Image (cartoon, rainbow, N blue to C red; front, side):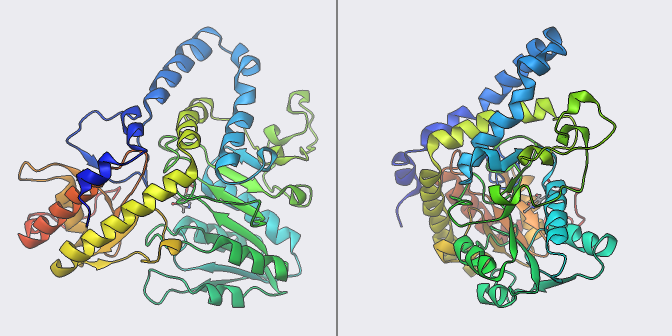
Length: 420
Ligand SMILES: Cc1ncc(COP(=O)(O)O)c(C=O)c1O
């Protein structure tokens, strides 16, 4: 195995790390798959926005800058996920956007009764689909494809359920717990053959793996900007609707910003015909503006280069896990095939929660390491290639080995913190 230091020396993306706020170099951050780091440029930009655009220019800033902001940011997201700029809307949350798109898809395919998803999908996605059935479409059924090992999903099983009676297949391109990644082209192709609308949740993929919505003929997608896109806590999400579908699908939430002429203040709703019809209310300007520097860095680094480094890092990490952690009772909770793995790596251990806490709050003066935990036993190690180094990964594994070898986790409680 090559040494971590050697790999860091040869890393062509290493220079990006210093463009993030790293207040304390002793903290080793491996949770960029949940909340990305703060770009230094964002601090400058938000400060100037608050003082100049809000403080000085006040309401005039809407015409001067803010009305154009969503379109400009959507265009940058579009180029990261392989879409056209008039196919992406940015705003609201991922869950809310999923609701808008899934509702539209079910209304469009009123004669088809099945919705297909998988058990590894993010809970919010499953709740939204259940809620739509329960509250609006009681004649539809949700088929949730299971996973034998809680790591992989059998793509054939998904494909077999896509037929003339399937309205929608809704999947996370990269699943949140195990990092399993679908073959997007394969599923989208089968969906197209059966006339099923396909809806991808790109939250764990955007900014980490190349996504080709247009080339794979994807119909619909949603995703967040606070993970690998480094947009900030609760940053606005995005949605994508293939151009030809925009006229056909209904946005069920009629707000004034989705009106063709919002500033006519007409009492009668007349939606925009473009992707802008997915707007609902006033854009969250401060958090929207904060998304842009992260996007610029992804575009500058190039998504293919990011993926190349991410794969080199997750392979390196998996080798370390096999060598040092499997003998300590850990198992690998992530697909080992490169083409089916996103950017984070999960490792499982019956004491996963307490090991995770021992990493975050060391009682022995060791370096603080921040991964996260997903029940029942997954520690997720986030590989964010713009700022994660090979040495970070080596150090995390060495510490995990020490925590289990010396049973350091035994001094931690099992009660869960509110955010794990
Ligand atoms: C895959 C996935 N989908 C949806 C969500 C929910 O996103 P939001 O809180 O923006 O609605 C998350 C949140 O982490 C997620 O990881």
